[in-house]
Amino acid sequence: MGVDMSVHIGPAILKNPVIAASGCYNRGAEYARVTEIGEYGAITIKSITSKPRLGNSMPRVIPVPGGLLNAIGLQGPGIDHFLAHDAREIAAVPTAIIASVAGFSVAEFAAVAVRMNGLPNVIAIELDVSCPNVDREGECFAESAAAIGEVVRAVKATAKLPVIAKLTPNVSDLRSIAVAAEAAGADAISLINAVRGMVIDTTRARPWLANGTGGLTGPAIRPIAVLAVWEVARAVRIPIIGMGGIETARDALEFMFAGATAVSVGTANFRDPDVARKINAGLRGEAARRGFASVSALTGLANPEFAGVRVSR
Amino acid sequence: MPEVQLAVETAVVSSREPLGPGFWRIALRCPRIARAAGPAQYVATDLPGPFAVRLPLGIWTVDGDEFTLLFREWGERTAQLSRVMPGTEISVIGPLGNSFSIPAPGSHATIVAGGVGVVPFWLLGRALIKAGVQTRVLLGARTKAMLIGAAELRDLGLTLDTCTDDGTAGQKGTVLDLLRDQGPVDMLYGCGPPAMLRALCEHANAAKIPCQISMEETFGCSMGTCWGCVVPVRRGCTQATGYPRAPDERRPYDLSRICTDGTVYSASDVEWL
Image 1 (cartoon, chains in turn yellow, blue):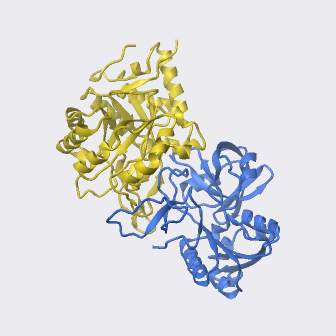
Image 2 (cartoon, chains in turn blue, purple):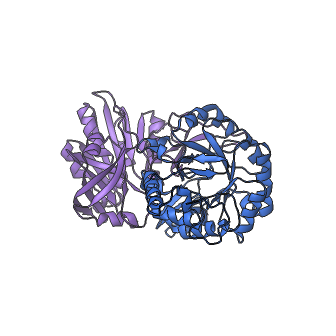
Image 3 (spheres, one colour):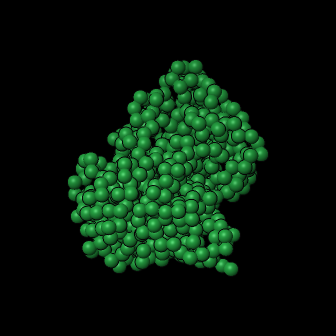
């Protein structure tokens, strides 16, 4: 019996539950040189802002045991250039596209998101309300229930695409933030964004990254991310896209068992460009071993208080 | 140069030898990469252990189905690589990055290498000899023990001048001192520490000599997706991202990904900030 690998992220349907995470896959072309990028159920493109941005100064990355600390600073072309020059490239990607949108004000998020309406191949918008590496003068939308509610409501008012709110674990009460996003109309939650961190160059006696702080990704943050999914899955009914250090199908299963409907893979691509195919094969095998007709039946299995929609086995 | 298809390959370590204090050479059997490798290209190696990203290393020499990596041990990952045993399989992606371009036959070129920055110049030296370019190498290091690669370059048939900061080998001084002492050439090539590269570019730009440098940064993905290893380049440079300028953007330069758009840049394109 075949396993149905498709998953529902709100009204959007993905052919499989494995997604390339924003910021790690650009728009797919680089990895298309060495692998079949269509193995991904969707590719989340690098965040688009309203204006072009050069990002942070160098150095921007430093590998650490178990991960990569980065502070890129949302380098990107801005929405005008993106629509004029990159939309055709997006349409040709052999899988669905999730458009990540970043901004520094409610109005900016809404203004960029609405322009993704009708773009070929784009099936959802992810709101990067939680990037750890840009100066917002103390304000991070995903650190406040009121702020995230405002952003999601503003985007939902004009966006025709399903809206995914990407949350940070760097908060004291993640559940209330997720509940606020759901209440404001978010179609799904993705979590976690990179965890704030720092590496100090002990020779020069100063932080390694030019930005000082950075965001940690990779397997080091996986238990933080699994717990975040577990907690949020008990608080919201909308689907969760789980991410943070997933390298194998076993890692992906942790997130699905905790309550994720789909998973995103970021840093692991850097080590193994073939990671999406392997994770899909492993998830398919796990569902089959358990006699499930759908991969979605794996969601929430380990979480007795899973509040989402259970898919029949 | 024909477009070479990248691939994830399994390479087998065939030898490993120390070349001096903290310097190592590892030979890897990997026919496709050994045959495709161009000067200044590199491989992204996946080492076993806790690191989440690949370690990029420049290709030193090639011989039939094998290529070698010459590297300096300076962190946990290079230390780990220095302990790898012959027979070990290592996943490598390559050859990555662009290559130096070669001037017309009969022209004169000078290669300026600092320390482990010698790595791209075995393949370049071989290509220049094959192209009939008169080539001189200026190789410098802090001290005699760190002056590596000279024997292999001489074996190719290249003429070498060496120098050390402390005068323990060759002339006492820097490669820039050696460069100023020699006559005009048609092309300069450089690889080494940032201060050396900057001085070389300023020299070349002032003297209006074409100059290509291979740059280094800490890479994240090595594939061009993470934007972790950018260098400021002249606006409009073909290796730049070519984004429009933001209204409040005062920085008069573009950015280029060293891992993918480089590592080789024209000295006239690099903006030293």
